Image (tube, rainbow, N blue to C red; front, side, top):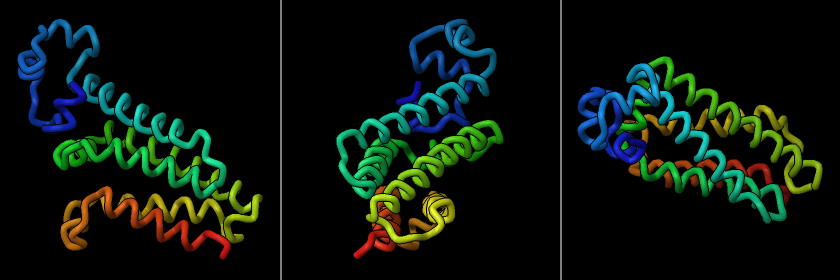
Length: 175
């Protein structure tokens, strides 16, 4: 189901359509969730959790705060590249899935803030408000989720996100 949603989004699928496409019964889908909205939330939440966990796993073994931030961002971006614009748009189409994305973003902000603080304690990063820096990074990333912004920039989401991370890390890093 996640592969189907990643490729085509979920807004235009009915439970009957999903059952047919997934070669299962509607009853099977109802065993997973009571409604289509519940099913969508389950899939989106699992996608976001797995994406975050991949980022955390990628940081293992990185010896500097910058390397940990780079590793986390690279893994999260690489995983997110496989989702279609339709799926991304659909995730912002309902309050429930938007809330899941907001929760994911907050987890990322908390992690980035702690990595910036760690880098500051180690003398790797300049003394800036770590919370503000983390919020600014996520605000910039949120802005480029708008497909019209990407079109103006003539960049993919992955290229734009990597650029944002590089700009911020270069600005934070002690020369």
